[in-house]
Image 1 (cartoon, rainbow, N blue to C red):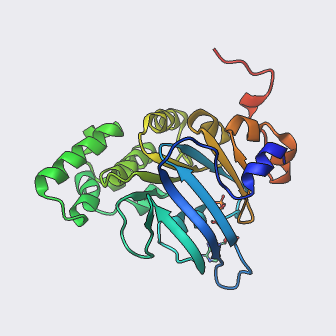
Image 2 (image 1 turned 90 degrees about the vertical axis):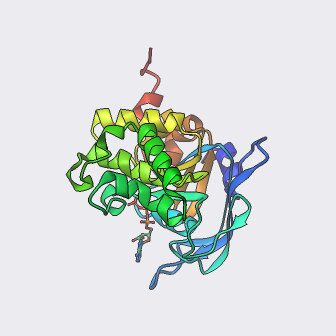
Length: 262
Ligand SMILES: Nc1ncnc2c1ncn2[C@@H]1O[C@H](COP(=O)(O)OP(=O)(O)OP(=O)(O)O)[C@@H](O)[C@H]1O
């Protein structure tokens, strides 16, 4: 591990001048049944407006961290705050949204319009506001033309973008994306990258697509065995071959000296 990465990884905190904190995780401890521990005294802070990549080998705890952050799983101890508000397990919090790895987990009605309207409806919004949010979210993800389609009949790439729209419709300030480019073709992946680059929310993107992290994120966390082992600028962390190999990862090709762009 590089010294810079190691120093900032000690508490999963970041150096930023931004005042507002989007996410604070303090002293989090969690284990699944029959597991010794996955997270132990885990700390993380993410400032407003940041785009943070979450990388790490299989089983390092990325998805679990997202489920804990959203209050889908309950920690054994510790605190999670979203925009300075404590997260209550099992209670809906419109400030945070999770885009699941499999869009089929997010699309369950027979019409795209109803899937995107589902969140705003449950927030108790009036019909005018719901309609406006449905249109805006579909427009933001480039899927307006799909509004009357049956979600189950969409292509994989279309489903992924509509699934993102279902989350955007709730207007969360913090969005967690779990492996959003998995199973997308090159065109759909490019659409997704452009969308993420433009997105206004604070985002955390868990992914094995290291090139996506380089293109989208201004900070990366390397997670292994439930610990942040490196935290910093994506290009700096991911060009550390020794660090990457120690955690079953590879330096992305675009960071090799012989690769030139433009
Ligand atoms: N429901 C569960 N019950 C028991 N153990 C689980 C459960 N879900 C995950 N685990 C275990 O917890 C650890 C972390 O899993 P998690 O899915 O969070 O990792 P990940 O970093 O997202 O992995 P991947 O990159 O493969 O998606 C793994 O050892 C996994 O087997």
